Length: 207
Image (cartoon, rainbow, N blue to C red; front, side, top):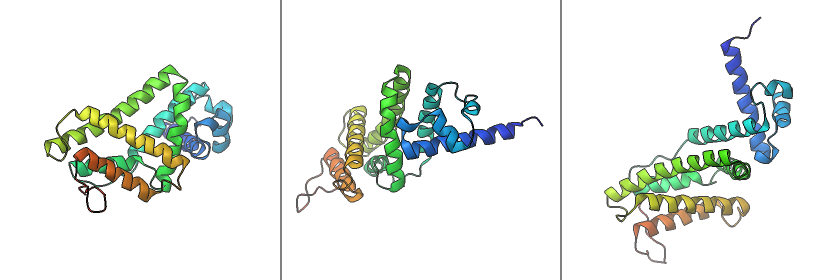
């Protein structure tokens, strides 16, 4: 019996889930055709129909990681500074799911940096994230919640802050538990807004 389009799409979904399970368990360092085939309960020969070479598998996994990240639920927030804060919190490993996704992201840096084309793709992914953050910053400036200036520069600094905090939290979760991460974000956002210190030395951050 010939395979139908539905069979093909179903098999692609199965392959995607197998790739994701390998990433979740082993990161990009353990992503091989053999590992995905074992997770799928298939032969490596079957996978070569989808990924003729290891690089094709890695490129697919990077796209899958971006799609999964984009599909994650986001914090509800209004416009302005609250939306900037929520966007930064959405990046951080504040839950078990977000921690797992961030571990995969960090493991992807090495394989992407080793290949100029994959590195360029990754750079564009982070650029798209900065662009979204830039729009939020610009709206906060329009509302008077952030000082006037270059929103792209503010967004680049905010993204760098968040990614640096991700790395610290992954390597030392005891020193950077979720509450501490949120506290650092609040301090950073308050500094952007130029909020005055509250009693006790903490800054007042709009919610």
